[in-house]
Image 1 (cartoon, one colour):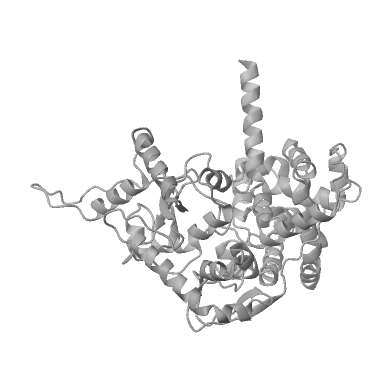
Image 2 (cartoon, one colour):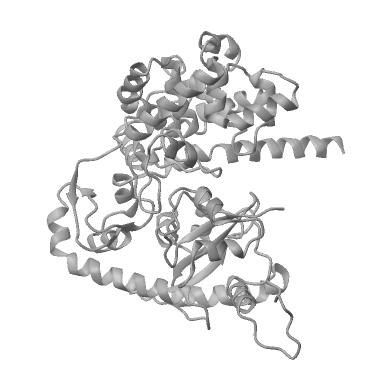
Length: 501
């Protein structure tokens, strides 16, 4: 029994640590980092990876204790070992990006009179990924929340999110750090509040009766913020001791040379990528502030240098592909009988509901598609998917037939399918007349995801206020705050809805 308990705790620790490295997973999937790592593999011979020695770790971090909340524990040790050995290649790319962004970050910190040690905050919070997006609403290089971004004059709506602009987000982050320090008059507390939220710090201190030790406080934070401080300690140690530890940087160029195009009509990134044979992730990396696949009319869109002439020659093809996308989304958003949507290449759409244990790579492997395709088809910007979330996947007709057959067999065990749930919601919203109609027809409870959210796909005729009425305790303002959007929504858009237990 004792062995089983120890094994269970070891497994839980491993899963927790793996989940905590989502920031590095997200960075590794970006176009600039993928390109840089592939180039490094082609031009450099693999060497021996030196094992990490965490003895004396606290002593090496102590010189930064005037600014950072310095501590060490088993979680910090695990991060150092994971980042320094099995994930060393991704860490090298993150450190390379830190070097690229150092002039911007250090210059802004100096301009605001802030300590230089704060440069390690974005390394821990986003792994230097300008396109990072967290479960608790943070986004961009500094993982700024929606309220903080708006407070410091960043534009965050359904079209543009300036948190993904490294220059603008760094300027906002410096102002937020300065204001937090004015509140706490203590840098370690300021860093904790910035990285994990002031509410987390206040609640943790109240629970521990005024305790200020970050080693004791961080386990009391919410799940999405609990690992930020241990990761900060590990990253600060690895960054400052990279040469001693034999960690050579991989130099990453965040932005490639680009041409600018403007169209009098709305564009779709997916359509441009398909028409010109450009990787969609490459276009997303060039235009990080765009919130979705849609590019507003006359908006400046960056494409790889030399591609502008090809775009102008293929503008008609881009528009035709966009019309097909719009028609497909319109049909998918209208309730009614299930219709098999077909793509221009003969593929057919299936609708897959995410289950516990699923991740994008696993789903892509199962359906023989690419992760980048899953992201494009479902307008996924980061790497997070939630249990209960519905994904559209374009597969061959034979693969779709096998999937539908498997789904029929599993219906009895796994509950209603995506299509049955949609029909249930439609019936609940428009009940057929009965002999004795009830004054308030019952509606099916929305599926709840593990982190307290469910997803809703906007249909034709929906409004944000109408959607909010379907969920107890939810209002339109909370939907706008959680999703970082305004009340202007469109069919096919996915809305994250908080669900109370």
